[in-house]
Image (tube, rainbow, N blue to C red; front, top):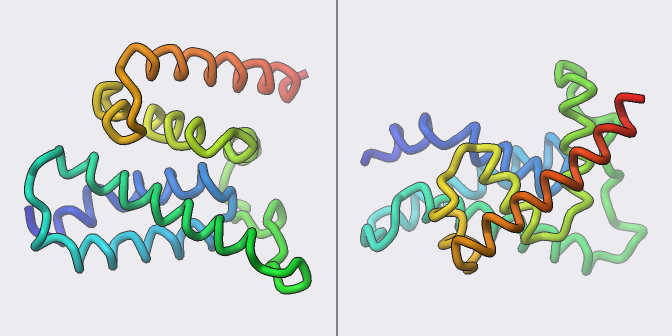
Length: 156
């Protein structure tokens, strides 16, 4: 698969996964771009041991985790201001609320639900996060339950 095709196929999915992690439009865009730089650099080394999507999502989640870790190590005075106001206004309030709820989940749960929202097969999600399929199904069910409860309060 050529890099251009990979980029066209996966850009929006990688961006949304990054949004699920950091809930900041600009930051997510930066991480997604960094992810594609890594993909470009590593593509010749890709050995088809897993699906290319699994490999890409793993790179994206690792980049997100690294960026969050770097930010957490920064002294508070240097931390960039967080987002709610920065998120572009063309995103619906319900979608903004969903990203906010997802960003409050644990790192693993954020990755799992972000991949689920991208229609990644649960078997692939299990491989990416290192769980077995039945544990992944249970986690997805529980995450959806928690998000549904938060949305009930949002709608009232």
